[in-house]
Image (cartoon, rainbow, N blue to C red; front, side, top):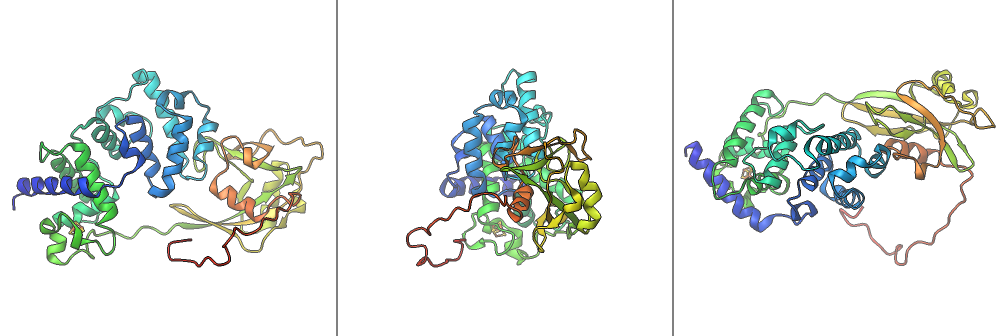
Length: 385
Ligand code: SF4
């Protein structure tokens, strides 16, 4: 089958399938570019069921780009807290300001103008342009690349630039292949097929609307395609965190706005293999580092895309009884304060939450709660954890 007629058949089959099988997701009930943008940014690296409550809370607080642009960054980060990849939240905030300052609060509709917004790359620009404005713009993410690799039999390394070029060219042809299939439907159906049917392992070819058109299915290559070069393993990094409680507050340091966990608050963390090695650097945060004691033998583990952190958690008293803290603290931090962690401006990162859980406030009242009725009888079911 020629490319053009194969493309048209794929577009037609995808659109028909999407009409039957699409999930009812909150961001699918709208064409508002602000909401489409927000959902796409939140969904990067994060599962749909995790995103839904964040998406709804965020919209309740910041219903449009203007509300987001006017908000303090700390408020934005606080609502993002726990979702990870905080640079996304900072970029959202910056881009909302651009929409207000450069576009009078109205989202641009062209992919080119969208790409000029902070944090908006080709994928997100294609998503907003096609889903909100039905512009015939392509998009390629991991799911779409996998589907295209299998359907068209692309055997290049899917992480390489050559394969990416082929995927983007193919996605461009597809989104323009059938005038009767709106770009919003074509792009979302490709993403949905990758998420629901054409999964990384054991794709559901038996129920796939593209089975008769798919090279990988025809040639028995579904376990071979897409070809993926191995990712570099995250580099192990040993760290020590110091947790100092006093009067229901804990000493937290705020990271600089740029970089890992930018703008977030956390117990001071330094790269060190032991508490002894960390002492002198932790003393710069106003702690009595000489009194540092391990809170737990087992380190807190936290895996990021490029680094695998192993954090020893130690307790220490605050040095000054009067509460005077240093005004100048070592990078990557900008300031230090005694903070109620539940009300930290900007919120605490998920790593900080793990560290605080390993060394909770020793003066916090012990709360005893009865198990919910029937809890003892409940049996653990697969997928119920
Ligand atoms: S037929 Fe199988 S491999 Fe091909 S697109 Fe469908 S699910 Fe993926």
